[in-house]
Length: 483
Length: 109
Image (cartoon, rainbow over all chains, first blue to last red):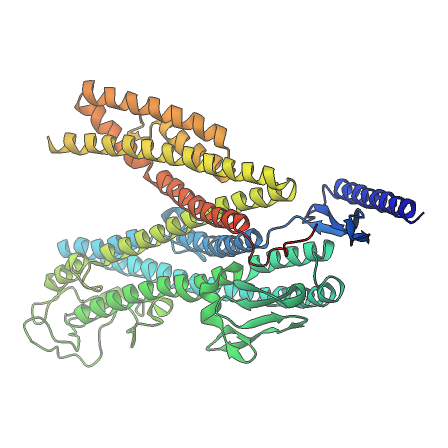
């Protein structure tokens, strides 16, 4: 009887196990379109054998619950790439806005920079025009008008950069609440997973945790550390703890030197978050590096042009015969009591662009003549016009310096754009692989990897041939140019 | 090729590079293999052009090549990212295929 009972039990448990497996398949089908759902497979376990007269008999299988088909290494790699793509994406958005500001056709009024390059040319050319007739009031008026346009465009550009920096600061601060809500949710899920499934895959709870981590990766750079009982710790890429088992640690903000800084457990982690990734990393890179770099270049331009033009104008004689207070190239100091300045005189480089303005409305204040040469002289106007070609801004001419600034900005935009395109492609690849893994068995997974290898090999071949074609085409061009 | 005084890149060359980046992002091996065949044909055409063309045509070809350097840079970066991903996947496969340190105890019937 015992044997018949055992046989019945064996058949019953096998049927139960099959029924559970069918339930899991039905669940997979029902959730086929659920975002973030990971396919589950039944886990069959052999039940303990029965010993009869010293001989062991297997007693069949039981189904011990579904196991999700996931790969934490692949998911972590995906999260890493998402962090990089989100960071370059948000930096690229900011850089595009920045670059649009310095696009010549964007107009010269309001919050745009207009065409500072052409403003500089027009300004110095107006002194060249004045050389021909130094006493002509219309020509003097043109000098002031060109100076006003230049100063207006430079200070508008600086104002726009500062506004963009403020907007980025707010966007960065806004990420904090999203990060905190996700880390709290992950800590809660950790608690549930550790108590419900300490030794097995937690199914939908795990799906939810993976999705939350994916979202968190798009906001901030993180590292994941798997802990005992299916727990998970999350740190920033520089190691500050955000989630430890069932506890989460809030990211807080505070104002430091007029901008928002970020803290974890009282430590300022702003610099680390900047390089860490996620959209926050991109916002902070634009706020703390790209915009300050642009502003600093603009400040240097404004400082050098205004101080050099002022110094030369102050070393000449105005239309009323009044000399400035400066010393000319021959070492002669003017007899005037008040400096003859065209622009406000900056005291330091920082802030020069935003403050740049023309301080005189009287065209007669332009000192076209040299000291003691009479008001009809043009020697100082010639010297002022020649500034256009002298290395007065960090060793470069004003237009040369500005061109280099715009060109460097363009290179930065292209670099970040290239990074972003490649990182998004990498995310797409990994997502494809995660989806493939979620829907196939281990044999199919091997063929999926083969497909990956095949795509890579073919792409390498395309690249190598194109590289050869381009190299020979470039050589043809060079040879032609030389001959 | 010369349009309103400006040179544009040979359309097939640019299209191949753009499509290759796209296909690689989606791991479309079939399309990439087709593109590799297109490239071989393009290579032969370029070699013929090099041998038979005049100065103007050679200069144009050189400038066309310059014009797609940016797309090539993107393609190179996607290829680089793919290589890194593939390295992770290969290691993953190797880890799985290695025998586990804690295998089942022997001797059970």
